[in-house]
Length: 501
Length: 102
Image 1 (cartoon, each protein chain N blue to C red):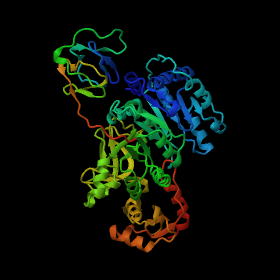
Image 2: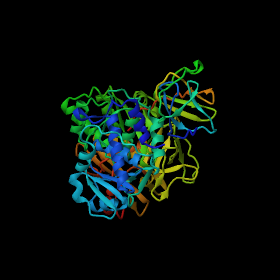
Image 3: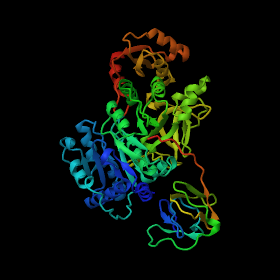
Image 4: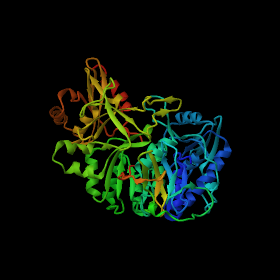
């Protein structure tokens, strides 16, 4: 099954429903599909293997994504936050390709073989402006790769994750009800197109019949203002966004009465932030979603009921589920495995493995999925007795101290219970005596953090080997723009200072 | 009748439109309102009568399954006929919708 089918059946069933954009400039489903078909005809005529995109969010993006599926040219969104040299490496790896670039980013692109550059303003003038064109008839394409997404490459050169039409359509059809959205529903998308959530948001909205409104780039002020002006009902945010959104709401007094559902993911949400969000947005259903690029987005989620039950419970086992990512999707098999591959018991920590039609587990020229379909996520985690999944971050981030595996997440959770902790990270730093030792980097609200009290809390709730041996106080921690803590950056900075211990 | 995933069909006797989500594991005929469905792009409006034994309707957005063959079909447009595979009535798949997560 191919992704354009999702748009096609929606456009046939409700051609006049609003699909893209806000205000006066919205496009209905008929226009959405017709424009995509015209773009597809043009792309097919260009004869390039791939279609790459470098630019900010906007309604041209979903049109281009579906057009790529129609034309059979994999869609390759590029990360505009990369340094020019890194960016141009990815451009070269996308060739032969048509590359559509925001006008102000054009000077960043070095000439490369096999790349046809198109300015976004030209693209939009040709395909996005004016009245709805006639739908072009195009034969069904062959190429079964829908999207190539470069991973963030924190461990080396970025890898091009392959998402096939079958993976993405399976994800959409097993998680979304066709036209399940009411006519007035609208989703605000602020994650960039080179993030898997930016891709899946387009597909699920089309199939669900929900209008998409874009923020070109995220600021908390714009997010709140757009939410209010467009009566946004659904949105997805990463943890760093939510805290800032709540700050703006507090300052402006905006209550976002139309908002119904807010999902978050892409990193660990500090519990105080989600508690604050629940208190400030009592009418909103919160969903915590966990997924990877290689799994076509969400594979587990903690729903609104789970949030309420966890916060209301006196039972510590249920209470702590607020920090979980909920249960695996019904369409996904999920196991925690030991290093030798055997399955872990409930409560036992190991590596998260998944299997299902939406799991691609594939990079360009390299399959990373086992013959039996299981994909090792490289994420550490565990399941509680009720099947709730706790994710502890990348397996590589686990601290190995004197042969003991220590997960930074549980130590950070204890630190975050201190009001004075605005942010924190726990890392393993090479050390002669233990192989690695535990250090904590904290951001203090008061500027006078009480380290002995924090150490005592960790000793009491966990154990002494998990107590940080050294503490660093910073003004802020480094994050990438989708809310992922840059642990390796921190680690490299600290390693020099700490060495010799 | 090649009921491959993603293939689109329409009822010969009512307004229903269908998409195959999972193919059957045996060859057979997808029927709506008691008559074989036709490819979506086939010209012509629905004609003929709906078999009263298959008149429970197709709902938009609902999924229909034939347990025996594994065939699963999505209602892409509603109609008054109901679905069958080789004469056996298909049943609604009762899946609880998940909350939006992206």
